[in-house]
Structure formats: C-alpha cells, structure tokens
Image (cartoon, rainbow, N blue to C red; front, side, top):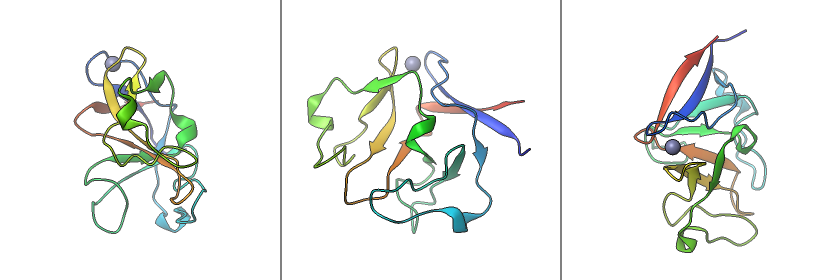
Length: 125
Ligand SMILES: [Zn+2]
C-alpha cells in the first residue's frame, strides 16, 4: 500500500480530506468534462502548466473532501451546473478557514484544489 497522507487546515488542524496517496501513474488523470480528474483516494500536485489549478496546489477527487463547507461569500460560488471556481477560493474548513477551490462545473473535469498555503499535507500510517 502506498504512503497515505491526509490534508489538514493549517490554522485549526482539522483534517479536511480522507486518507490519500500520491498518484504516480499520471495516465490515470481524466480530462473529460464532468468526470473526476483524479481517481478517488489520490492527489496530484499541479505544476501550474499543463495541469489545472495554480502551481503547487494539491488536486484531489471531490469525494475525499470532508469537514468542509462552502464559502460564505456568495460571489465565490458562481457556476452553471456546479461551481466553476473562477472567483477565488470557494471552500472553507468546518471552522470557517479558507482551504481551497471546488471546480465542479459541466465544462471542466471535476476536482478540488487545496491551496498549499492554507493546508498541510500530513503523513498518516
Ligand atoms: Zn480551519
């Protein structure tokens, strides 16, 4: 079993992801609109170039997110069928600290981008 990690809010330490492993085989990434970009249970680090998101962000499947809630600024929550993530960070930990951006609209692969300045990647078992 590959090394498992979890992501925690850097301010309050709340775990905001299920256990995840680094995705080694990048052929498993899925660029199809409306489908998960990263397989469940994995993360990839954006290089800010050919991968989506800003450089250094930790990209995960939306299903690994936990103990989080939508941003209280409605202006961050735009989208067509989901959230387009184009207006900045749109998700907070359960205690109200910004953690990252959900991108779940119909015209993009679905993913969640954790901002590396707002979360910590912690080794677990
Ligand atoms: Zn927090």
